[in-house]
Image 1: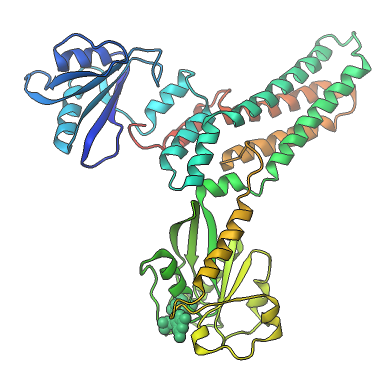
Image 2 (image 1 turned 135 degrees about the vertical axis):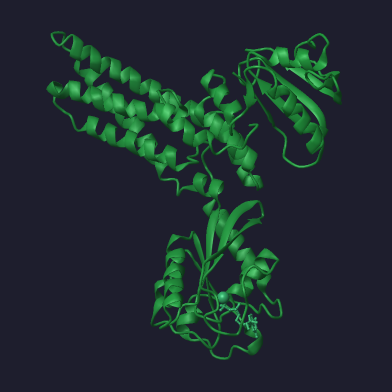
Length: 443
Ligand SMILES: Nc1nc2c(ncn2[C@@H]2O[C@H](COP(=O)(O)OP(=O)(O)O)[C@@H](O)[C@H]2O)c(=O)[nH]1
Ligand SMILES: [Mg+2]
């Protein structure tokens, strides 16, 4: 089967790139150009005609990539044509008339590249991350994974575990030959070393996932403090309704921001107070949940409504920034409890001191995003397999008896398998769908 799709972004553009991959690629080129196939990897100007009628569609560049030296490993071609909807549609239409050609599914080019051993699973995922990266730090992270340091580490752990496994299996196969004590000790200490390295990686504060998904900030506090006003100010548009009527915000309203290259998802929440209104009560519950899930809470209060006996007290922790809004109304006597929290005094009305708040947010973000290691866990999928790998290694360590060796071998096999799944070195059909479906068509 040969697949084709628009690989450049949708919409009108100067140039659009249509990619074709599969055994019929050469036939498509021949039928549409009625000329000889261009030299491999040489940008070649050609007229593209409708198949069957020979009517000229457009003139463009064709690049012919004979397999296996191509992205997918199959025969491939790129048509660089003028980026109008009509041109793209006419070309798609013509290719579809060639037997065995069909439009590609989302992520299918990359899936074929993976299936043909051109890239591993981590690289496939990082290509998807790079395509969807919106901020500088997301791009840096995706390119880091693409360069393969994480895969190298996972493969190295896996290789070492396989070596241990072969020693253990030798013991099972030839029980009469006593393994020297030092080999037994070596087996244990190398598996322990790998386990500890993975555990260290797992204690990463989820930086990689945060960068990929966005750092969560919740604006919480009592009603009417100016939470929705802050969200609107930060996102530079009216996302949330601002009103002097207390209890206006009920749903959690999220917007995505780029703060100094850091991806942030900021959410405005319902003001917290005692309420009899069922819907408002639901909103308050959601607000408290958002605060709990967030990486950072901006706790907004106004000078009049500072009561630390209730929920505010629960929000005092290291992920909170306390902000007193409406400083334009005058702040006479701050309570000692509030003073201790070093609140930032701002006025959204007069746009006073908001710079300081943003600077504080940035410092907190930077502290959370410090990456000391090149190896990053960027997806929950990787974390889960690493955690399972550790579990099996712990099980292996707990088998002290040589009679337990065949069970120990199974522990090691499972541990290895989980590392293999991350890079795609085992039978992974079942997880492929979920990964490549995240792609858009043409990738
Ligand atoms: N005087 C003054 N009023 C403000 C300030 N910020 C917001 N407000 C007003 O306070 C009311 C409540 O604001 P809102 O953002 O809806 O608060 P929320 O309930 O916490 O979301 C609105 O009438 C705003 O115009 C400020 O800095 N000073
Ligand atoms: Mg509000």
